[in-house]
Amino acid sequence: MLSIFNQVNQTDLAFEKSPGKTRVVVAMSGGVDSSVTAGLLVRLGYDVVGITLQLYDQGASVSRKGACCAGQDIYDARRVADQLGIPHYVLDFEEKFRQSVINNFADSYIQGETPIPCVQCNKQVKFKDLLTTAQELGADALATGHYARRLMGAQKAGLFRAQDLDRDQSYFLFATTQAQLDFLRFPLGGISKTVTRQMAKELNLQVAEKPDSQDICFVPTGNYSNIVEKLRPGAITPGEIRHVDGRVLGEHQGIIHFTVGQRRGIGIALGDGEPLYVIKLIPDKAQVIVGPKSALAVAGMTVRDINWLGDNDLPVNGQSLMVKVRSVSQPVGAIIYPLPNNQARIVFDQPHLGVAPGQACVFYDQERVLGGGWITRDHLN
Image 1 (cartoon, helix red, strand yellow):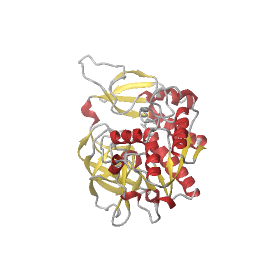
Image 2 (image 1 turned 90 degrees about the horizontal axis):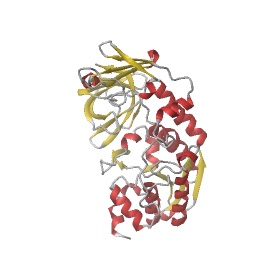
Image 3 (image 1 turned 90 degrees about the vertical axis):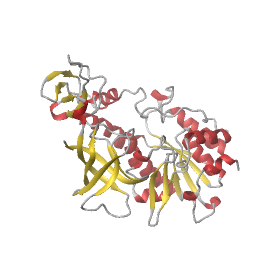
Image 4 (image 1 turned 60 degrees about the horizontal axis):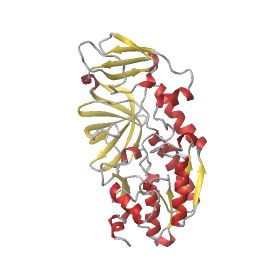
């Protein structure tokens, strides 16, 4: 075995059966990460089956460089599977994806939220329906190319940040249930993307130099508002742009064009040169509230639909943890208090900027993911 493959920590791949008697289904998107995941498992001697999900109409995205889940991706996944000599199936999940991900995306924007469709896709499609399909195929595990780690603790498997924090995708996996985590494997979580590409070259995979996905898969042009307008015609309402002090500064053509924390594209400049940021969206009044950067600071917020992955229940009197409120932000200190109806109150150690409804708040205890929930409009100022 080539030395570069020894960099992969195989502890989490340990099964009661020998590799040759252990079936692992790999979710193959056609990109380099999932392709290397399949190739690595084949090299380690596992009984590997590749599955690619057809999630939406591919036609518009085939030629867009860096797009995800385009028609070319299905072709690339099939070529890799053929090269590795493993069975490969393409499953039509278009209707499920439209109902649970695309429609949710459009409705969230209309409600003044900033949705994260990748989390919904993991929750509703990949780690639910695909996982069930893997089990029906007699698999012992479902492996993906996500950069996150699954490590066994004294009580159960835990979800951890990737070794390479620049590639860490644990934020997008917070909604993974314990039952799903028990069945999942993330073989790339302990290596860097550079090593992954080196492995792809060693395996002679034709996708070794394929660019990473840059956009949401069903928004090939990167223009989210066009998708929302197409899916929800007539739901876009013009309204006022107001300053936090109450002044009406202008008009907008729909709150779907704005997100909390946005600075560029507001279309209004004050005479004193003060930069304006989107502070809040009020969908029932079709208002965009803007103001200085300092007005973005909040002391805390409420999150809903909590998924808790800790060994013990969240203490009633609260627990100090690190939280992350956007995929690109750094974790910050906060105290988390459980609330009824599967909610929690988050109180930051220091006021935090850019907290947007619809985004995820993910809880961390050092490198371990203890769960998370969806940010609501209920903020502490």
